Length: 182
Image (cartoon, rainbow, N blue to C red):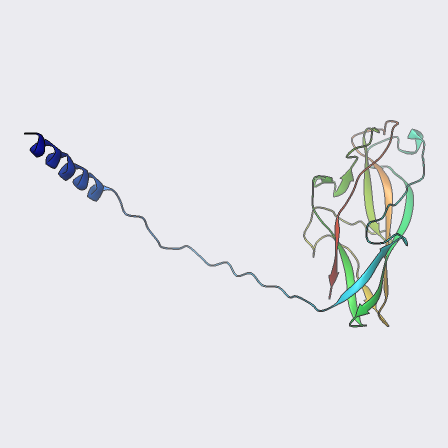
């Protein structure tokens, strides 16, 4: 009797497995990824400090930022590209998205500082806004021509009030960046 029951159980398990639906392997579309790798390379120096550098914004009073979207103390900075190979073309900066980017305003949050209601906005040298958190082609970052193996990329950092009047305290944030060659 024992042998017959186990045989019946095996037959039932096989029948149950056969009744399960089979997986469908049809696809709905194709995604194609494309890009380019360039041989262009340059030495990078931000404000003469190397590829990792600090932009020091001057101290301002809270009265300089009394309401939402007010800005103060535009501070220019540059990223110099030298010894570029090849010695021509163009280059710009892509500011990487990350935890310090406010995707609503397109600015940098005051990540580790103590001041309230303040962010750091980035502008091109011509004062047009850079929209952080966007794709490389939609950030509105200006490119510069590489001539004789060099280029200078000019930008501006500024305090921007967010959500009301800025409160006193420190401002500290970061942004990672990538040089994009064209």
